[in-house]
Length: 515
Image (tube, rainbow, N blue to C red; front, top):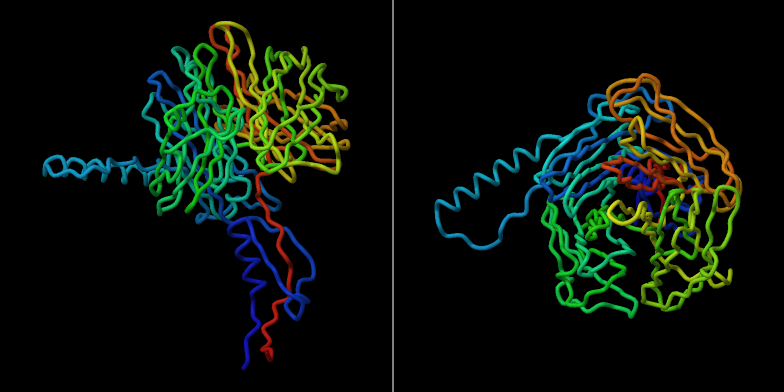
């Protein structure tokens, strides 16, 4: 019997370039011998989802989207797209027999489908951000895809301001890639909190998700957190306090999918303290970094969780402006397996910017954990909070959109060796010229940078950070939009954008081989 050893390897290379990931296991033999080296290729397709911005009629939302220019980028082709469109509304499943009501529902569904085919915003060329706005509580969740030269590094941001009421604050979130596993340390079912988990499905088929909650005493009883159906091209929001009878201040929420994939983010609101989005923390790891605690933070709370079977003992260290040090009285933290631990670090930065690093007490016992910070600025009725989840390094490149003429601060933290990074401010959404600056971040420190807006820019601009040399860099961007004496702010982390994928290089062997 004969078999054609054609292009399992070449096919894997193509798949990786399209989807952004690949897995190739080849046993010893002719196929294995063809894998010579590994190379990096740009992805050819990216997906993003954005949650519904707000339920407040006073909400004002800005959407921004951007693709950084690539090497030798010629501006793309007419077939390249990067569009975000409205998600479909979730229709009532109850059986309806009244012909008039059935017809009305069908007409509403038809209008919703027609609206969902029209992009809210679309990137036309790499290097130039686009901007759209929406007001009120009716702004929908968004789903979108980028292809061709617009796919590598495609990013989007939604920023919502609410100037009055219980949801007062700035709510910022980077639109997320769909996935199957998410951790949210810092959730709550307390009576003072309103935490809504937003699940958005970008695909045509339905997705099914499970939600687990873990408090200081372990798993929180919930009989309705399993089997949550998210219809295709739709988004659902679940109030966490309706999933359990237990009122718990500090929780870790774990979201997984049985089928399909979703984008997941948590909208939190605290009576009298503000509101913001909590994005998923980096995957469980023995060492974590949470970059960009503001210099004027009045309160910082660490929430951590050990998802495995072993307890974790970690060192708690602040990477400040000039050095790394342990906060007095909180230099270590013991995290019991399956339980959420919290630490009040108070005003740990004391007037200087910083980043928090967690490392194992025993180097040979690096128990994986997840973690996030809740950061407060101001006091009393003038306070506002935001979250900084543990994040992956910038890696090759990361971008964040919706930077204004004033109010943006970029934080760069180097937990290991010195690192050199390149920061590019793009042209504005309404014009201007891109600018580039290079910074060296000393090992064990945090550098806070006020980006210089691009010359002649109008609208908003994007920031792109690239690692040039040295150790890993973790980054975040804080956006401050003051209102009536309140320093309303939001923080977005900048993990590697996944614009390239490492794939095996192989000869194109079309020979026919004997079995």
